[in-house]
Image (cartoon, rainbow, N blue to C red):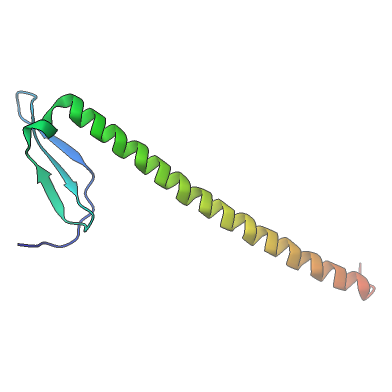
Length: 96
């Protein structure tokens, strides 16, 4: 059965004894999946996997942030050029 899209951070769930029970996350299609494989539930494996996820998300957000600032700089540059042209036109007309 297929469900609806959900935004769910990669999460590890643990038993009362402190051992990992399963990992839940969202797949590429936005569907929530869980991983019960013993090989994925080793603490070192979980730590490494989550470290990689955090690193990748930081890199993705840095790329998005860089693009945003680039657009802001271009918008400010366009605005200053436009304002500069207006000031020049006033000076040509004899206004101070």
